[in-house]
Length: 118
Image (cartoon, rainbow, N blue to C red; front, top):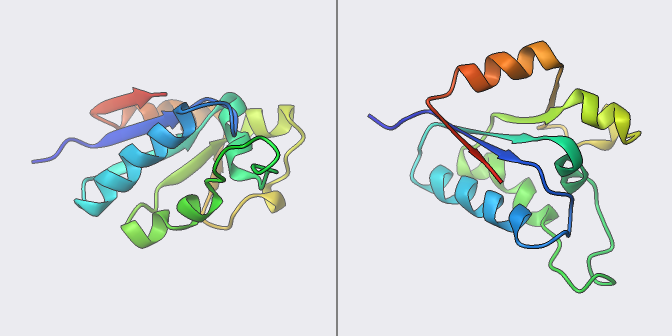
């Protein structure tokens, strides 16, 4: 039986390879129908916003992020306190992202067998 895995993406959008690596792990797991969830935490919540990736000479991940539900990855969360701290409103997020308050975050982490933080 596959272990229930949570991937936490903590790095800001377009900050280097971390966001892409987290997304690759989740997409690969989804392709193999593994039970997993994705949490955007801290500065990582900025990955959920559209950015000017051409100016930064990095590939925009928004198309890959929107494909997550197609790969069976439907448990996608954002840290609510990070969103508030950065002035991001729930309306700015894709509809398939669920903001979580600290108490719910603790439960989410506790409910998973493995946690990968990038």
